[in-house]
Length: 98
Image 1 (cartoon, one colour):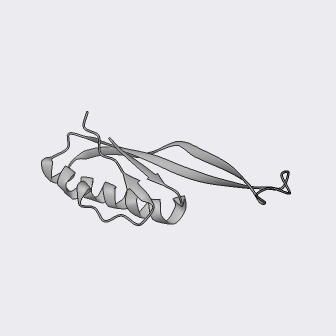
Image 2 (tube, rainbow, N blue to C red):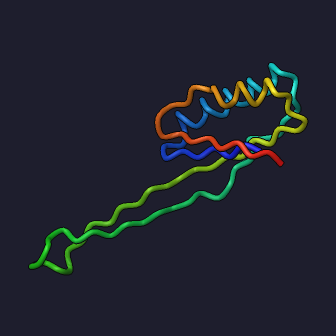
């Protein structure tokens, strides 16, 4: 099971998904996915001024898009290739053995 997380979904996460799927195909492992997981939204509210204008605030949000690739019957070479995969900045990969 490989969860992918990215802060800027369309361009960079697509490259990571392709890379993970290609590595699984090359080594002959069966895989399913990418399966979209719910988007995590983190919201932050910050005061514009430190003391005087207490009601004036800025609001920011960060969206984290997650996808799941499930690899059945992985070979050791598959796991080695996935750990050495070059990912763009902002894309995180986590490999879980179940």
